[in-house]
Length: 128
Image (tube, rainbow, N blue to C red; front, side, top):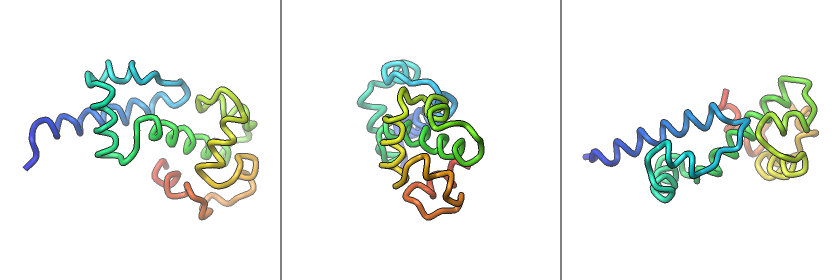
C-alpha cells in the first residue's frame, strides 16, 4: 500500500518532468528546480532515481540530446545552431555529449536513417 509521501513524490517528479521538457533551451539551475518543487536537492535526486532511474541532471541532458537529434534530422540547422537551441554553450561539448549518448557525432547523424539502431534510438522514439 502506497503512502501519501510516495504519491506526493510521484506528483513532484511528474511536475519536474514536464517543466524540464518545456525548458530544454535554457540551462536550469538545480536550486531553482528544488525551490519550485518544494523539495530538498537530495529528495529530488532520490525521487528521480526511484521513478526515472536517473539523476535530474542526466534526465535533463537526455531530453536536450533527444531534442537535438530531432532537430538534426528534421531541419537544416547547423550543428552549432542545434547545440545552442538545445542549451549547449559550445559545439565541442555538444558533440562529445552527443557521441557519448548516441554512439556517433551530430554531423554523421544526418546521413543515418531515423530508425537507426543507435544507442539512443529508443529514447528518441519515446520523445516523439
